[in-house]
Amino acid sequence: MSMLILTACNSESASQPTIPSEAEKNEPSKNVQEQNSETEEFIEEKKPKVEEDELKEEVEEVSAAYQVSDDSSIIPIKDEINEDVVLLTFDDAPDKYSLQIAETLKSLDASAIFFVNGHFINSPEGKEQLKKIHDMGFLIGNHTYNHPLLTTISEEKQKEEIVSLNNRIEEIIGERPKFFRAPNGVNTDYSKQVVKEEGMVLMNWTYGYDYFEPYMDKDKLTTAMITGEGPEVDVSYSLLKPGANLLMHDREWTAAALADIIKGLRESGYEVVDPNLILTN
Image 1 (spheres, rainbow, N blue to C red):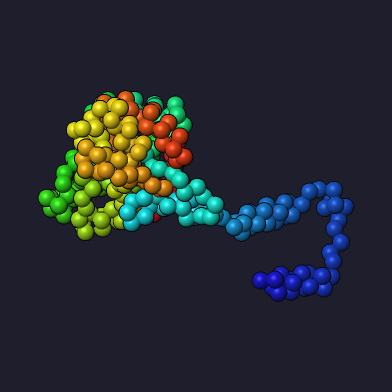
Image 2: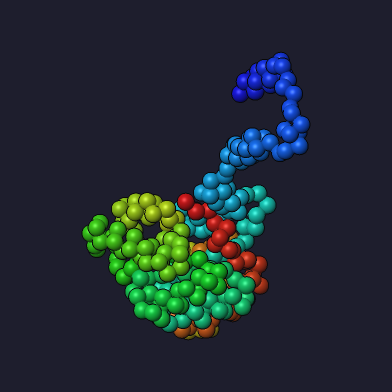
C-alpha cells in the first residue's frame, strides 16, 4: 500500500501544474471540500476497531484473579494474590430471607453468590427480590428451576431445568448466570455438558452446616462456620482452609448468624473474596 501511495504522489508531482483563475482563487473549492470529507471518512473507516466481545474478554481476563478448582475451592491464578480467602454462597434463593442476607452482606462490605431456584422467582415478589439483590451488586447463580435431583430425571428435563432458569433470570436482571450448582451437589455427565454449553462454571462447596438439624441455631451455626468443624454431624476436624467455598442457605438461622460469621472469619485472618474476581467461561 505504501508503494502505491508513493507512486501516486510521484506521478502527481511530475505533472504540469494548472494555474487557477482569479475566480477560482477567491472561491472555496467544492471538489477539495468533497475530497477532504471523503479522506476523513476513509481514515475513520481505517481506524482499528475493538469488538465489544473482545473488549469484554480482555477486561475479564485482566480482572480475574482466582479460579474454581476441581474440589470447588477458590485458588489464585496470579502471583501476589491473597490465598487466605473464603467464598460465601447462598442456595435456595430468593425465598424468605435472601434480601435480609443481602443487606447484611452489603453493610459489612462482603460479596457472595446467590444460587437461585426458578420457583422462587415466578411471583412478582420473588422477581422483585431477585432484581434488588442483583442491583445491590451480588452475582446470581443457577440452582435449577425446581430443585430436582438431576440423576432422577431425563436428559431432556435436566436441560429444561438448567436452560429455562437461565432464560428466566436473564429476563429479570438482564444477564445470564455464570455459575451453576446442582441440587444436593449431584450432577450427571449430561448436566455437566449443558452447564458447559451455557458457558457456566460448575461449583459445589467445601463445607456447610445450616441444613443439619443440630445447626439450625444461630450460635451453633456461627461457631461451625467460623471453625469449619461440625462435631454433631461427625465432622470433628476443621474444613476451613484457604479458598474454602462456604455453603449456606436462605434460612432464618443463617440470616441471624451471618454478621457474626463474617466477623469471625475475618478475625481468623480470612478475606471474603469477590466472586467477580473468579475466572468464568
